[in-house]
Amino acid sequence: MAYHLFEVFGIELEYMLVKRSNFKVNPIVDQLFIEKHGSITSDTENGKIEWSNELVAHVVEMKTNGPTNDLLDLDSLFAENVREMNKHLQKFDTFLLPSASHPLMNPQTETKLWEHHYNKIYSLYNKIFNCKGHGWSNVQSMHINLPFFDDAEFEKLHAAVRILLPIIPGLSASSPVLDGKFTGFKDSRMEFYKSNQKEIPHMTGKIIPEQVFNKADYNKTIFEPIINAIKPFDTENILDHHFLNSRGAISRFDRNAIEIRVIDIQENPSADIAIAAFIVEVLKLFVSEELVSLEDQKSWHEDDLFLILDEVIGSAETTLITDKKYLAIFDLQREADVKKIWKILYARVGSKLSENHQKRIEFILQHGSLSTRILKAIRNDFSKEHIKKVYFRLAECLNENRMFRP
Image 1 (cartoon, rainbow, N blue to C red):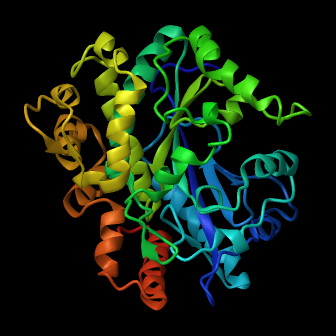
Image 2 (cartoon, helix red, strand yellow; image 1 turned 45 degrees about the horizontal axis):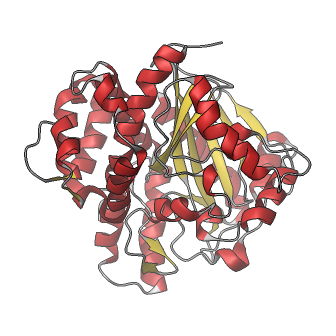
């Protein structure tokens, strides 16, 4: 069934399984599914939420079980599932860890691919790209799926999403620490995302999708080069082009949706869903053309948007935007940081959010991205024990569905 713009939503959240006693990742998602379902399966339905496996055996995904039109109660539904998973994991001395990266994981020695359903696909990916790296096995994100009905709606939604992508990490960055130290990037997940698939550059492009605004052009400009580039590697023809497209927003014409993928996972579902609801309202604002016309939105080349994104990956909300054309979208005459842009957008659409979502967004705008708060809590003490202490607190925030204060 095809839905119209903003009629329904699909949300996906990823979490790591971590052993309490040694703080190492624990590749037992299959055991979690056996506890829940009685057998190993790639997808386990749990009412309105579905549990799924990921590429690696220590990451589990929760997602809406089909499209939903209710963002209001979604955070409590996800929070219930978090608590249920944690309850099942107790017998394995294991818990769910939020944020977009494990600060101490060694992906070279700790990565274990999912060995069950879809293993053939994951093994091929591993053969092509070597998935034993931070950008593959040490990443957790939230994906937002937004529907479009036809080419006319796709044009509006794709134009709006492309414009917003560069500043999203300014709201959502949560991966500042890898290998026990600050990487220099508040969004290390997205820094790795840029070069993850360097063996086949067509797959990721410039993260920002190209200027294509209908299905035919998308196929020609994005899908066809991907299909041609993967052919020498995919001799058995088992990889789907929708699956291979790795831009920061991918267009799923098989289900008429755009999936936004540049969002780091937060410390709890209430923060994740508040960010999702905020992004949805801002996209509605762009689609309405109140801020900038559709033609102006479409005029942006991916290279120019990528330059902004690249800087925001480094400094998140404190990134100074100097591009006058981009600033003009938000009626800014002089350079401003990303936090100011999000505050302007919140002033425009904040009243449309629920009271609970407003509180979460206001908290982030006041106290900074989760990356900023993690770094404040670490206070330049990058000893393993201190890092563990901070991230154990994050795990408590996840289980209790509360915000992380540094």
